[in-house]
Length: 359
Image (tube, rainbow, N blue to C red):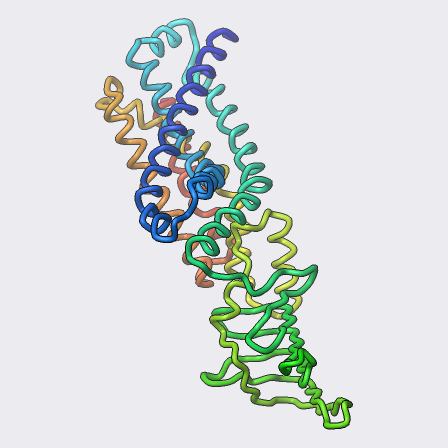
């Protein structure tokens, strides 16, 4: 029995690596032809182009791993059926569960590995990938950087220290603004809890304004609300919003706690956080759904139909997964439900399929 399990596991891993390699190659090829004109337009060095695609590989692997798990499992069982090996195993008392157990164990271990890649590797490589695309290709010069607790941003004639920026609501929070003259001496300093964009200017709330007098001293004027014209607009601050794919699980959790403490809406980030946990398990769920379907009468002897079935299942699950996450980010579903509902739904369907095969 151990020899058979090792044989099945070896075939599954071989096919998994083959399928994953094919998916990564196709993804890179399509991405290359989509972006080559952008690279050539700015005369991007070949080394930078190579780095862009190399840094993108961990992201591609993390996205394609569940699909590769399903296709490798489907191909492994299809080949066993076609070679009458499934029949031989059944004749010696080996049932479907015993035959597929090594595949499911491997799928769960790959899920753990996928989580580690998404947690420790993808955020680092995405920072580099986004830098090449945004700065070297799109020529967006970075005007700010993230400190320990705040964003620092250099404007036209001011330096901003910002606790948080909400691009959708066009709101700055926990703000200090140093407005300079030509001699780089601050002529005005603004402190405020919040600043909200109102079409043509910023409405500052609960703050104080320090203005430079002719004698060199500062006059402090507290205010509840005050309109102040600044050169910067909400679009100028968008680059300060860190993307979720550039943060690991712990960093994203801390970011959510920070936003929650500031009274911000954290729903989209909480959905992304739950999706980080749920997505690696899509591989085993797809297997649970796909393998029983191979024993439908028309699929037993057709590898091509088995592959077509696998791709169809991937399409259905992918659409359902993204629709559920979209509903969650819109606040129509709780974050936990949005991320885990597709897995529970297809897991239940897969379990029903296994019961039918078992009977």
